[in-house]
Image 1 (cartoon, rainbow, N blue to C red):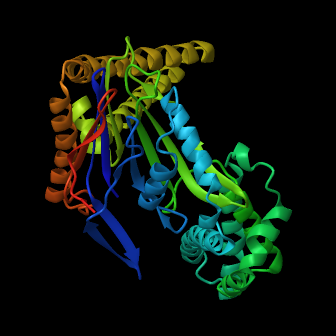
Image 2: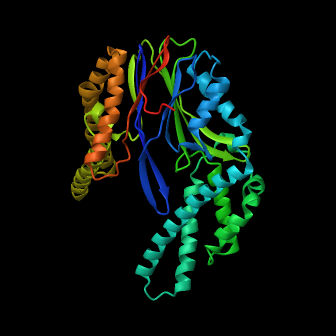
Image 3: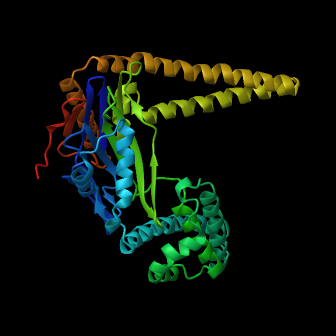
Length: 415
């Protein structure tokens, strides 16, 4: 895990990142504080990139890919920041030596492991439910019931996925040719881990995997987030844009580009936290995301309880159902919507607005300090809490301006 932040106003952008990386293996994890997560993409142009989550694309470190891009295409200039993002995607697609079948097989197998783990988790839950409610049932009957219910639940989850528009033409026939056949020995071994499922159920699991590969969801340990920050040649003020990358499916890169966030004459400053954002959001909003959600959930429960009590009294007095419905709708609107609006307005007026107003007048040095301190306070919170210290190590800070370009303020990796 990690923490990244971009602090932007009309003068430029300050970006900061911690250096912690969590390595998983053999059922355990270890944190190292030595990973670079900020990179310049050009010696000529004012453009940089931050990275979080998976620090590799397939099996190649993003750090190496950024260096290759900088060396081969770093001198290219684009009118808008989006041009750099789109060109980087084109470059990523073009590096065929990083996308061999062997490399893609590793990606597919890791993705299938996640699906298999999800299936096992569902099965274990069903197994406990069935055995507790039917103590006299035979073991074979338990397995059969649990397999059927687990497949049904997994199918419902998979069916809710939207198809990634870039992968909509990747058919089940393509799946067997591009994914299954090159890793046939692996899938045969995995099949042996589910000895009680039928051949039809195994084929259904493979169908689910095909659907999983082409969905529009970007999550899991193989997903990477890249945040581009800087200026196009026609930009006066800085901008940032995030993309998600999740490996290859067949010959297609699986990625998604978010809308660009730009500083403008009417939107003069912003703070954009990424990855572990809870502490930074707490500082900006005056309340933690967890507490904010708990307050809202508790309010809904209280409203529903009060409205339920009112409804019961009205029904007891034999009030018309239409009148009861109008009262319920009106009560919910008055209590819930006005409460939420009041809280949101309070947070904005007393916290967010003040931070953004102050940031509007910050110089580059103050912006760099702010970015560094936002990462530092996240590190401190993780250190003093019972949670894993997944934010830590030296903090890197850089600033990006229209004329001076990308410039390090703090940089621990001098190699």
